[in-house]
Length: 427
Ligand code: UD1
Image 1 (cartoon, rainbow, N blue to C red):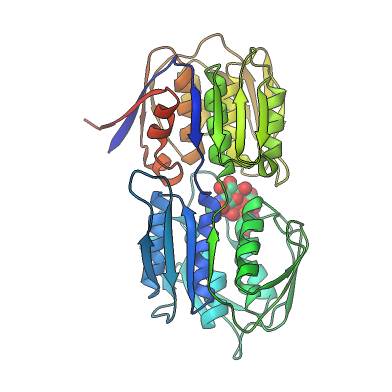
Image 2: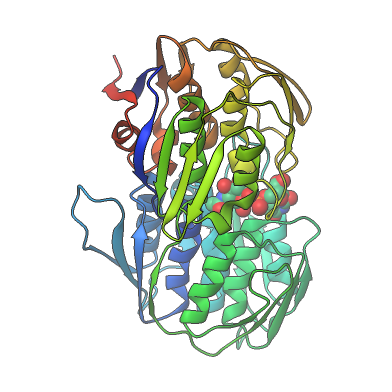
């Protein structure tokens, strides 16, 4: 298994390309199940999770053609064609590796009238139930059975009627599943308290390009008028706002200055606001965002929340940055109950962080020091890299398959802006 070696202390400067958004791609790909015609997605990031999802689509008889970009370029163009489905079952072996596989449930059910998906296993960042995915589909007329670790969803003869659902908790994935299923339902579906993350807007925009009728895009109340048939489309995946935010933190902790080419400031206002509170200068234009850490970092208090609040996927990276700020910061994680696994590892690097339930108290320290650390989940892993870039000495990050799930060619991008980072085989 590979590991990353980082020698901290280099000030990052230069330009970094921002890839297509992983979390958006993971909900755009299953839209291919909604049509017999080809769906071409551009700007798909080259990531283990995307490869896994492509493999899953193959399992259903969807043809997957990867074209275009040269290996040295970022991103790729992939055409999915689900002219005929040969299976409606997502097996445990594939789902276990990738939680987002649950996102085939809604579109498969709408297209084929039935779908069987293995229940995703436990997850390192809390329980992450799927009850809301199932309740929303039930409200639209699906019958759901749970047996032998699988969810089996069935539509009545003649297809899903559609219906109304009020989410008791904002859920990105459950909203995505419901929207995809509703697009092909017989009637209208109204979703209240729906998630309105930019990735949901990206999903709705693709569905509209495929012929769906959706009102309220970008708001928490969506009305989806089901259509008989959706057509194919060619669509560009939005920029990854979490990747951009992560590299902004990486640059800032080194006192650096980087341009995040392709990042969209409109979709990451809460992150930009947090960076500014910490004392980082942020400028944006149509083509990207520039960040510069010219002054010392300031402590601040931050709380995660559903969009347009601060993304939980930015919590760990901002925490690393706050480890080097002047003063004490208080962070609150309101989305997931167990998302502080990076804290013990950061403390091993000299940070001073205490947690109590969903609150973390971060006392800024003069110095972080390199150490051997273990990546636990995707964003937690990134927080360790960020800390390592500012630490004295060398840090070894193991279990980097987490990073390969979500950061396209991480070390190459960081090398582009002057980081001393290399991937080596484990001994
Ligand atoms: C997605 C993102 C993930 C991000 C999260 C929150 C993808 C592939 N993943 O995950 O990176 O951290 O949104 O922005 O896009 N919940 C329930 N029942 C459900 C579903 C969710 O109680 O059926 C709860 C969860 O436990 C959590 C909260 O709702 O406390 C939000 O989770 P959700 O928005 O569904 O996260 P994901 O879609 O899994």
